[in-house]
Length: 382
Length: 123
Image (cartoon, chains in turn red, cyan):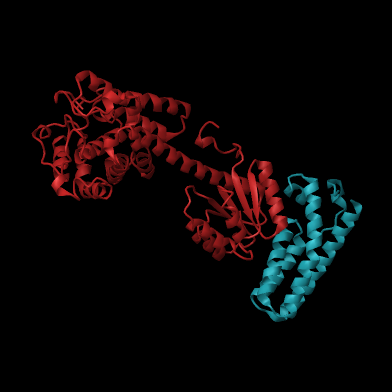
C-alpha cells in the first residue's frame, strides 16, 4: 500500500467482518465471497448471538440482515452504537427491503451503509472498501494525535496544550473562511486539516535533550539554539513522510506547521527568517494559537496571564510577530478563544482561579521574549 | 456435483450460471447450497400453509419475505417474484388474494423442487 488514497484495490489483510443473518444460505454465500476477498469472517444467526460473539471476536465491520428473530438488524445497530468501544465498528445493513422507511430506520439506528439483497459482488466490494477507508482514517487521526502526545509527554509542563492548540487553530481558520481574501484558500477541508495537524507543531521536541527541554532555569544562548532545532527536527521527520506519501495532504500541512510556526511576520523568526506571506497560512495561524496558549498557561518559568493581558500582547504584535489578518481574526473570535481556554483548562489557572493569575510582568509588555522558554536574553527572537 | 456444463439443460426455475458466479465459481459450495435450499423449501412451504390457515398474516408476510430473499440469493427469480406477491397481499391483509397468490407460490415451489431434485439425481 502506498498511501491512504491508494487503499482501493488493496487487500483487506484479514480484517475482521461479522455477518449476521438468519438465512444460512445467505450467510454461507456472503462468507464465501468475503473469505475469497481476504477478510476474516465470523457468522451469527441473529443480533443477540452477534452481540454475544462480539465479546470475544471484535469485528471492524458488521454486515447484518434486518429481519431476524431474537434481535433484528436495526436493534443490533443501536446496541453496537450504545456500547463503550475503543474502536469504531462499521455497520452495513443488508436486506431485501428496499423501501425508504427501512433505510431511514437503519441509518437512524447507526448503520453506516445499506445494501439491497441479493448483494452484487462489485457493489459490496466497493462499499467494504469505503468502510475500510473510514476505519483507516480513524486510525490515522488517532495515530497523529498519539504521536503529538508522545512528543508532548516529555514536557509535563504543558498539560492539555495540544487539545487547546487544535481548538484555537480551528476557530481562527473558521473565521478566515468567511473572509473574501481567503475564500479560495480556507475551506472546510482546510479547517479539518489544521485541526488534525496543528497538534504536531512541536513534534520535533522529541529530538531535544532533556537537559535543555526540561531545564527549569534560563536557557543559555547555546541551549536556546538547541531548542530552536525542534522546528527543523519536526520538519525533517514530516518531510520524509510527506515525500513517501505525496498524496497525503495532511502531511504537507503538518510539515509547514512544524517547520514554520516560529517564523514571524516581520522576518525575525526561526528557523528561516521567512517574511509575510512566505510563511504558510497554516503556520501563521498556529503561531497565534501557540503564543496565546503559552501566554495564558502557567509554566515553570512564567505565570499564567489573564486573557486580557494575552490578547493585549497579541494586538501589540500585529504586523511584527503576527500576520495582521490573523490578529484581526483573533479580535473577532476572542470570546471563543476565552471559552476554549476555560473549557480545556485542567489547571484552572487563568480564569477559574483568578487569584493564581499574575499581572503582566514588565518584560512581556512590549515583546514576547521568554514566553515559550526562559531565555538568557530577551533580545533573542522567539 | 452440479456442473456448469449442465446449465443449458436447466429449467427456468433458477439460473445455475448466475448461481455459480455468485458462489465465486465454487462448485462444491453451489451444490451444498442447492441441497440446503432443497431441504428448506418443504419446511418453509409447510410453515406458510400453517400461517395462512390460522390467518396469521404477519407470519405469512415474514415467511414469504424470507423465502423471497433466499430465492433471490439462489437466482430462483420466478419463486422470488411469487413470494413477493404473497408478501405484498399479506402485508396489506388482502385475504381474498392471499389464497390465490399462495397457490401460485406453491406451484413455483413444486417446479423448483422438481428441477433441483432432477439436478441432484444427475449429480
